[in-house]
Image (cartoon, rainbow, N blue to C red):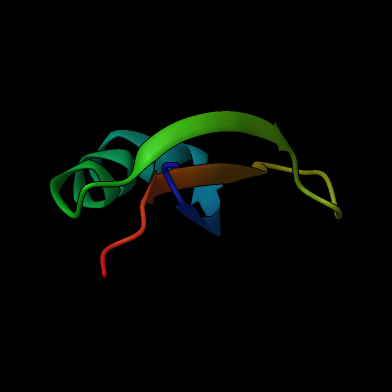
Length: 53
């Protein structure tokens, strides 16, 4: 059975591509993006990747 690990991270609207590319290079897959808890220009990204070991 595949085991997953998860990560959340804030995404700043002006740097979204760079942030997502960095997570992708580390093997994280974007699962969902939701509005940040304080609104404004911040959203929260949820990532997953297969757990190693």
